[in-house]
Image (tube, rainbow, N blue to C red; front, side):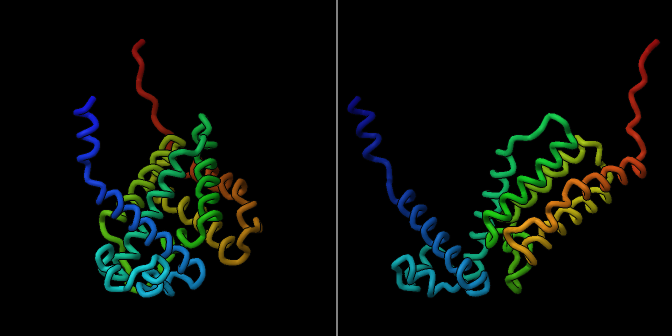
Length: 210
């Protein structure tokens, strides 16, 4: 028992404190972005909001680009976790629709994060490989869902992404909070699946003996 207490007391609390402070910095950055736009995020304002002088902020983040990168990674992980936690239908094509609804819910609930993930609103910013890995995993997740629904042609995958992304983008750009464009999701998916079924050769069934 005493050994366990000694081991607990010997744990270094500094990494946890540093991570907590870093999370506070990212939260402040998102608040600034929500109020002033992503381009309006500044290290000076973020430092002020977390009670640090700007030079002290460099102990946690060394540049504005690095701050955007951390925000991109955090948003990407949040979206990926959200998509994976959704309750999907056992019917593969209905599951594709469920994925669209999950994405739409995230975009509606996190508009600033979605802008950073899907729109090039910060001139010159490119996410690091580590932060972009979440986006790549999300694409792989979506491609696997489409494959289960019989969509395997890369061109068809591109069309699907363009259609769904276009609907959501139009909605968020022109009528945030409404449904003028997103209410057409079922019609768009119906046309898409019909097109796939007409243009993609059917999957050949394995030969059976006898």
